[in-house]
Length: 238
Length: 238
DNA sequence: CGTGAATTTGATTTAGCTCAAGCGGGGTGG
DNA sequence: CCACCCCGCTTGAGCTAAATCAAATTCACG
Image (cartoon, rainbow over all chains, first blue to last red; front, side, top):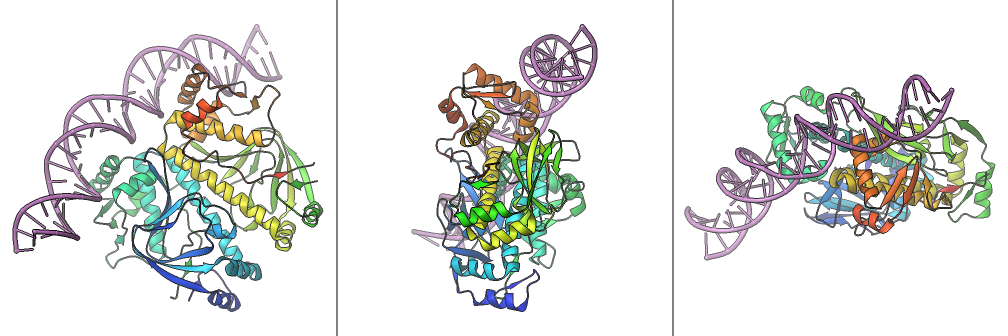
């Protein structure tokens, strides 16, 4: 039901398979996890794309991150604590839900598994650092370039590339704006700039990175670190 | 040598005390942890103030967070992985260093202790969410007000308040600027604004919050959550 | 006292926001 | 099958928060 990219022994893999788990289907637009709740299960995104976000009283919204297939919604379950943001679905999705106690037990028995969870948390935090750095210190086009590098990179790792090298990313410019802390209008303008410079083409939810190096140069990714590598995600042999 | 605010049994407390630990003194300005390193020990800040940050090629710097007495520098030690930022000291400091394997073992034996570590990680990430939200969606004065609320709140929890209700916070406006993603000049102007409105007085590293409610209103902290409560920090009975 | 760092002030510029309107396309209902 | 409409995207014309540049001033400390 579930395998890993991380080095896991057969025992460990077996243990994961034995965890009781129900798979549910959700529709795009659904809210998977609601702020303030204490989820009793660990959610693993099997297919689809989700995102973490929070709304402000004035209607503004900040998006904190995206979840791709194989990502755990929340390592939060390891801590019985309220979650501080919502998780919504961009697309229809399949979500595998593991009983928290069971998975905890599994972690307790197999250090490697627990280690994998911790790595995920760390990856989350690395990504947040990167995003904060972006928001605080880089110009809008830089941030945008940076983001495109990150998301396409992650999809690439997952092998979610079309034959023609494009990516299906169902984000509207509204989401992009709320991710980058900029206006829809400005997102549009930056994007056109990129298009004019033959860096990327992103329309109709199809992203085409035409000049990866150029894009990376804009993103100032040379000196800096590459897009925050998410810890080797849990894969799935459905 | 070390006690906790979190509910810990005597056994657990005892276990912590038994972990071999050396205390070192550092001077303000020292770099405690360097990006890319894999610290073999867990650092606990006993006294002093430290901060996480990263430099960009162009000389800009983003500060990711501050460490107050009782904070663990990095739960990172639980994962043997490179750290993605530097940690520097604002002041002279005492740092207690625990052998990573020992503390890991301790965590393995006492679930409560491990739980406390996880809570710390979660607190870290909650704080990052808050900061990202700030950077992305709020105006400079709002961010600043927000930050003042957070840092003074944390110091308050630690009981680090002067008799006259002021706080000693050794940040220059340069650090504040690099924290908030704004210019020193602009920090100065915002601060003066606050001063003019009798909200806060912050000079000579002494912070005086004169109108907490007013400040919170500026910070838009009503609807939103209060300053990201750091998990009950490890306290210290030196 | 003197020197360098931190803060303040003023003048100017600009990146990015706001407002407002037009456009395209795809989905729905008649 | 067509008409309409809604949603996402684009364009244009100001406007403004915050950056930049450049000094002056105050402060900390040897």
